[in-house]
Length: 108
Image (tube, rainbow, N blue to C red; front, side):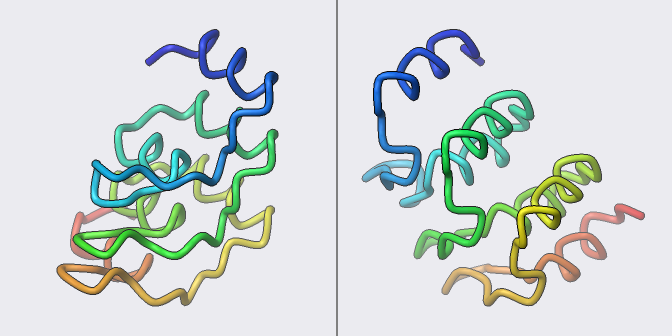
């Protein structure tokens, strides 16, 4: 996790919504949440990351679905305050809604 470098790149106009060709086509926000990098996720949100970006095609998650899957209540609250779509459709293959992810991973 490189918070300073992420902040530097975003401060110099790196696109916080550009999808990766690797990592299942996740946006930087989706990837940072999936990896559990809360501070980077917050920086991305500050710099305009789309909290409702559609999930990547393979095993994809929206930002909220990813937060539910890892059981990060604080990040889920931040995303909901930014109007994250709570009932967004999951990715095409092996996708889960936010509620399904929370239940499946046994997070309260």
